[in-house]
Length: 432
Image (cartoon, rainbow, N blue to C red; front, top):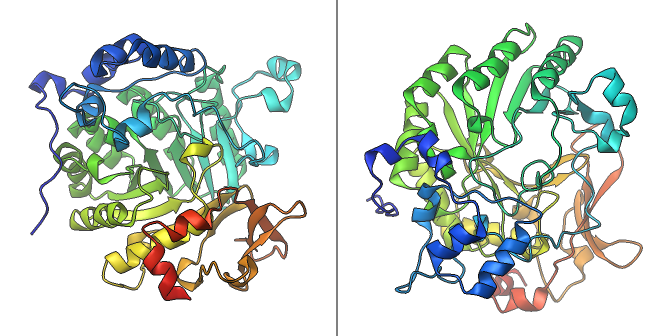
């Protein structure tokens, strides 16, 4: 029997309008403090964070945040942890290598004259061509609400200068026309569904006019923040332009509300395959029971899990987990799901987003044993070791079969003592 879905506050019918949700989002420390009974000190800390970044939490999301009898946010609420401004979010892993390589980037929205005045590192690119047959195009710089762990924080959370979108769109189309090997365009952002229908349609129309493009795909967080964005009109637009895949970021079972699932069903009934893409985030979904519940609910509603990202650069340090913890997490989830064989096409794969390309973590083949050296835990293609400075890393072979170089990925949050005293203690014992 299907579990009862999470309850949310009853919203008036006029509030179930996506534009109303955006217009009435909470954006200031004063508004947040009044909503959740912050102390003056708490309000001041949030205000300090918002001097450098921005916040926007829709009424829908506010209704999902659990509060106590005094109206204060309960400790470790998974919705607040994702959206609530925090004094810790600026503590980034400084040695993290950017996901973006300069040679992959295109469509900066600049004129030749403007480009001559700016160094490459100061330009804001919309397009990225990392893999041979597909590109990512960031069609918006804003979102419905702002995640505090966002690796695109330079474009979304922080008040950075943005590219001229209309000019960049034409540059992106020109790039596609010059590269017939590209068959798929992934529209992301910011969030493409934060755009008005007519603006989004302009992008879809221009890309669909490129004869060599077979597939347009949407990556979005908006349905989890504002499910009312999925309207009959949007569904018809997706039909018109042959959108067959929509990847939605949803990170915790509490986000899988009736409102969200019913709107995703509109897409599914129109022939769209809905998949989730999720970062593994400390205190939010790095718990085996939480993640197993999430997967069960997705499966019950025909939603496929695509990628589980270990950590996307750049993520605040207090929200990261170690690769070891991620491996143990998925091994424990596998047990929670009855020891099933992990079918990546349905359940998704655990990946490390290395700047040379995503690499699947073969967690079923890894044995984390604190009694043995790190070098003995991995496989012949995925290894735990240390770098020349003695810092813990994982290294692995490239996704590209033409590359023979090992790729390195810094893993700074190794803490085996805590893992041995955690939910994974029994699992560690069985692996010895």
